[in-house]
Length: 342
Image 1 (cartoon, rainbow, N blue to C red):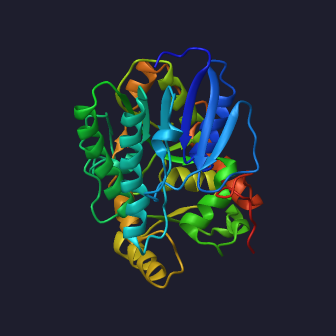
Image 2 (cartoon, rainbow, N blue to C red; image 1 turned 135 degrees about the vertical axis):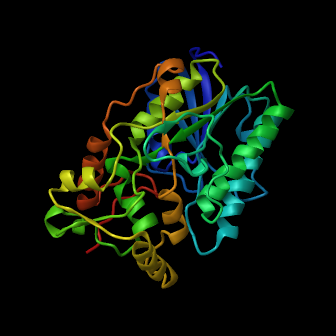
């Protein structure tokens, strides 16, 4: 899609962490005429030139082709992280729902599909160098999140073969944070009753340093800028999105003014598995296994072809997120509501 005044963009998952940033960026773009945000629950939020529609992608009754009618592009962000103890439920929403989105894009004749993939789609890779978008995307099969993201990469391969008229862009961002996502992500990964105010440096006598725990982070607004930039080009394919520097225990310990203490993988995993099995922790040990194996990503293609560069460093992102965690920050949508606990 060439970026022309009056373009109509539909965003699925428009009220979540990424969706709120993408909708806001689109509503501020003079080349966008209208935005339609799809979500299960309509928000108390009215950005300029934005309408809302209540849609549940897991429902076979949803008429997505009608929602996509006359759209210049569909940005597909909708994703359910929970319940991790019931992978059949997340499969229905994330995989079957996404396939419905792809089929509706073709049925409605939408020329551009921008899909939210993830670093989680990648096969295990190196932690001492960055890989480009050609790295295999078979995920870590034990983790539902990675398994589903990888499956959709294969589904998009088939979709592109069957529908070459649709320009497909796959964004593969690192872990995404912003101040307003703090309450949502605390509930998703730490649990509803984990007190955000406990995320204070003075309460951390040391920081566990688990071998392999080196990842990348990105501000959600910077990811949104890449999504919007892709609409104004004719590029296709995958784009890695991440900020510098790499995040490991040494960087976090310096940022939190504490000291890293080496903790064996087995001990860390056993603690997470015990909490998950007791339903005390939503994040599964399988996702922990995946995080230890995710490759580091090279983002040269996004810089060159999209003219994209993150405005926030990874350190700035994490500082902002921790502040939001302590303050119970949120946004005026149901998934993002700010809530303090403890």
